[in-house]
Image 1 (cartoon, rainbow, N blue to C red):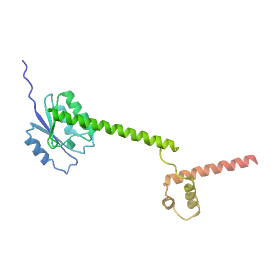
Image 2 (image 1 turned 90 degrees about the horizontal axis):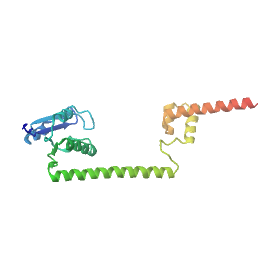
Image 3 (image 1 turned 120 degrees about the horizontal axis):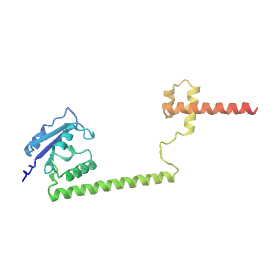
Amino acid sequence: MPPIPCAYKVGYARVSSPDQKLDAQLDALNQAECHKVFSDRVSGMKADRPGWTQLMTHVRSGDTVVVTELSRLSRSLLHLLEVVKEFEQRGIELMSLRENLNTSTATGRCFLAMMGAIAQMERELKAERTAAGRAAAKARGRTGGRPRTARDKLEQARILYLHSDKTAAEVCHTVGIGRRTLFSYLATYKASSTGSSHTMVSSS
């Protein structure tokens, strides 16, 4: 018979920036009797985590990945559930020391199932709020996108810019519009005025 592979505890530690220390996490993982520990000094929001990639290559079926707390492992609840699903498919357990979570126990699996239900509820509520917002906007004649600047405000800015000693920046600050909006309106106004002049000349 082939030898049965040994199951190991494999630790993972992470801090968000290079100037933060891993000592407390490493001590806790060593006390938890981890055989090997991988670590990262990078924000959890970044997908590229070299230490995590090495850990995922190293662990085998029957192993347990140990973290000091769940926030060290995942970027969000959704990401955590994705990681747990991958662990389950590969036969890997998860243990979190602070939350006293262990997916090898019925209690741990129940806790994760509840978290999954909460995440699904949050997604559905967000979708409902988005749909309600769109419906309300449509009822008021808005179809999405940035609101257009009121024409009277644009005209006020044009007059100030052309008939005062104010700079474009000062005009935009006074009226409350952006420089790009001002110059776009000036170009449009000039084009329309030129078109009107040509029409009058042609008709005469």
